[in-house]
Amino acid sequence: MPIAILADDLTGAADCAARSRHAGLTAAIALHPPAGPFAEVTAFTSDSRHLAPAAAAEQVRRSIAVWQEHAGVVWYKKIDSTLRGNLGSELDAALDALGHAHAVICPAFPAQGRSLLNGSLVVAGELSSLHLPTLLNEQSCRSVAALPLSDVRAGAEHLTDHIARLSATAALLVVDAAADDDLRSIVAATARALPEALLCGSAGLLGALAERHASSLHTEPDMAFSESVPALLVIGSGSPVARRQIEHLRLHGIHVVMIDAAGWTHHAGDVLMCLPEAPRHLALDGPDARHWADRLADAAATW
Image (cartoon, rainbow, N blue to C red; front, top):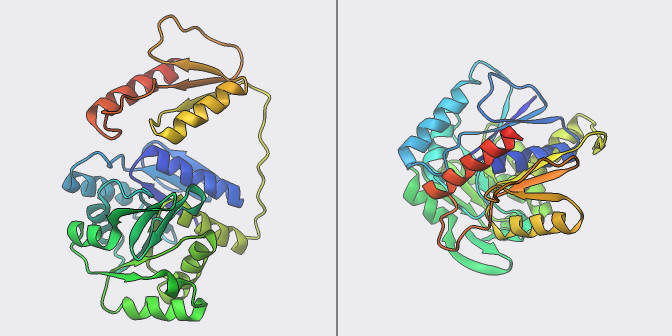
């Protein structure tokens, strides 16, 4: 069965597609909701993170409606691992559009140092003030329940039973995780307890789902990459991680083009196009950021 990944921004869709490819599945990224699957995994975006909750929900409904006639699709709702965006309204819209009664939610991304403990986001070992069950209670019209890490690590049968039990009184089940094995346990237990539930999380949980899907197809990862033609790389994120990636590529000989630089010219080899470092006061999801994103897209298309 094909997997459809609906993210609220393009970066999230790309991250999930990359994780699926790493697991051995064919994966594609669509800039707009496609008419149907054209790979084992198709990731696309509702481009709704910056919108008001009602508008974001409508974007999600429209994105899912394009695929409504395709049966046997496994849906995954990608959310930000730092809990940005319209979490509750988009989940409600996705469940309504798909006709699903439950969602199992875990935004943990251990590979990036992000965990969920007692429902609270932990980043690089620091406990944040963001409590996911509280956010969902504020943003969603559905009932919420939480499963602590102790339940996740108490064994497959225990976790399966607890998911099934909580599903009798809650539609949104928030589950803790602090390691990749926790995510694998959540995917496996959900498949047994609530096979029709919508899985929702970051690229971390999607990676566990892709691994399970690939193993059922007996697929081996194939990460071969052709270097016969030059590559155009585009980094649009303004995050500190992205700045470190840009500097790493520059130090390893990739030609870097900042799109605000006057007089940049074509280069025969590999090229990285990126934005100048964002001022500290610039909101990464605001209108100014989208203006710069448009400039970057125009420059990349011209190149």
